[in-house]
Amino acid sequence: MYRLTIKDILEATGGVLLCGDENTEIKDVCINSKEIKPGDLFVPIIGERVDAHRFIESALHTGAATLTSQHTDIVVSEKPFVYVSDTEKALQDIGAYVRRKFKKPVIGVTGSVGKTTTRQMIATVLSGCLNVYQTEGNLNSQIGVPLTLRRIDENAEAAVLEMGISEPGQMEILSDMVKPDICVVTMIGVAHIEFMKTRENIRKEKLSIINHMSPDGVLFLNGDDALLAEVKGDTGVRTFTYGTGADCDYRAENLHMEDYQYVYDFVHGDTRVHVRLNALGKHNVGNSLVGLAIADYMGLDLEKAAAGLSEFKGLRQKLIRVPGKYTIIDDTYNASPDSMKASLDVLEDLETTGKKIAVLGDMFELGENAEQYHYEVGKYVATKKIDELVVVGDLAQHIMQGVQDSNSDINCYSFKDNGEVALYLLSVMQPEDIVLIKGSNGMHLDEVVNNMLG
Image (tube, rainbow, N blue to C red):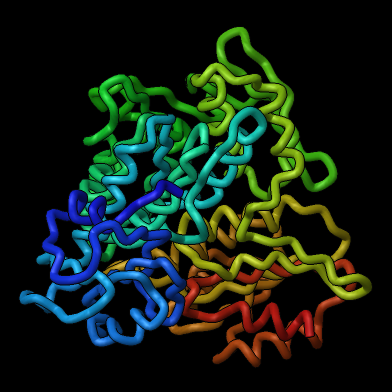
């Protein structure tokens, strides 16, 4: 990380030092008083339920300094208090300050689905040739991105940063902080449509990632997404598409599966590189493809760049083989209609002599049309070669209705809670059976997985 002092914090935020030494060194920034370490600057965020200013005293038992928007006069303390009008804005100012110090390429990744996997795959590809820094965990929000920027490795040769939004106007804030040199938009789905109202609004918000891009920057769009492909010539910046379509600038050809891994040829102009991808799902071909596209754009060795994809281990979606029992596709981290359909594709593609079972739970933040989106997933389930559908949750009943209205031969079952789902699966599954378990994080379907792993 870059060396910072309170003097730097004052310059970044325009804050006022109420007490303490401006030469105090700041090792990291922390927003959780329970996690603060020696040398940390505590940033008390005012949330919907809790104002973290109440934890300043306890945080300073360990931390080095604090921001505050509630102490406006001189404070008696050996440790620095820096007054700012808005602690969240000040946190973002600190992130932007550090970003200005980092002079190497920064890749910003956004989209309705696949941000994390795409970011991880880009980092994996570039790491074949460069020292790469990337977003830690899920620090991709208005608060997470500045924490990510503060921790950027000053010795890194490139940074890959995930940028997530849920409401209009948020991408403008993130773009101003990150100032990406290269931007990636993975796809436009209906995640957070409750706040954005339409997919076109979501697209407009996602594309504002380019608003603070460097003048010679470049944008990569998923050409397999119709909403993105149609705006390629209207972005106002240099733009490339990637995907499986013949008209994509960077594309995958000869795509097939070998030993649960996708294999394809990366093609751009006269360049052709053979790729083996250690990841489930055709959608992850595109996620890996844009990593190689960026490596090609940066002039890196594509053979070295592609090599890491055969050992890729970054997916939240996990294939768990329980010897002598069954196979579980654990995709319980989160869900949207698009990601649920992609996971159903994975289930269908896996070869087995046993049954294929889909356990699907509610999807959240879909707004007033939530029931319809669930119903449409059910209609999609009906097109898949699977044997059973198990649903849990009120909204998921509409998934089952969609299957039943399609006159499908898929057997459908509904349970009231995760415990019942686990008991059912444990009673019926055989060694060659495969079960997909997926729903929004708030459905806690990981409980089903844990019970099955016993």
